[in-house]
Image (tube, rainbow, N blue to C red):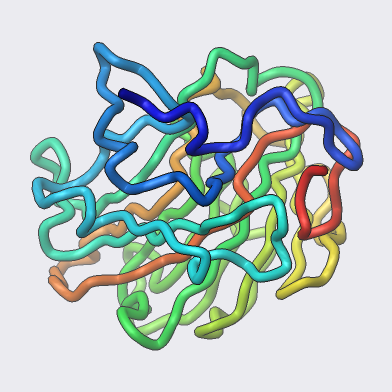
Length: 259
């Protein structure tokens, strides 16, 4: 039976905007909860179907050690891993992605899509491959890491892109928490970016950029898609995530998260 306690209950009041959907994990959440979800049993806060054929534990892990320590709304963070088994549905891309399971409208008005992520030296991402991260189905906005498809050599750049064009960049440093909020105005058809490191409050780093903003409220891919870039690498890559939620404007800038 699905545990209703595995994520924070909704709706909840935030310091600023109203939280429309929460992907935060409490202490009772387990990886086994993800396997309760199916197309015929759409329970919990997350859809879990884009992954390889190994057990869920190979691709996902929950632990207090996986979250940003400054995030006090989350009791656990999640490890999302890709490796040489992460081929989904016959594709040649390595993919491990979780997607919101919700009846809330996450595709209209002025919303902020929040998350924090980090990597470590152990199972570090390969900078020679393009990674698409925290993307919508249409890829109107997303993070990218590594050597872009068609380029060569290693590239340790983490990029925020709109329509495939980089708008903000930084070097990816192991052990560093990177905090983000996609600032999406679905009515005005614009997207901006708020960002910070560690425990620092989010600040606006890119203001509104024109974009073909759209979502059916169930196509935000939290995780990683790695393109083959003309080769394969079976080594595991771990990405750690916390503070995942969607709120209406105005923004909750504090990394502690919604109240």
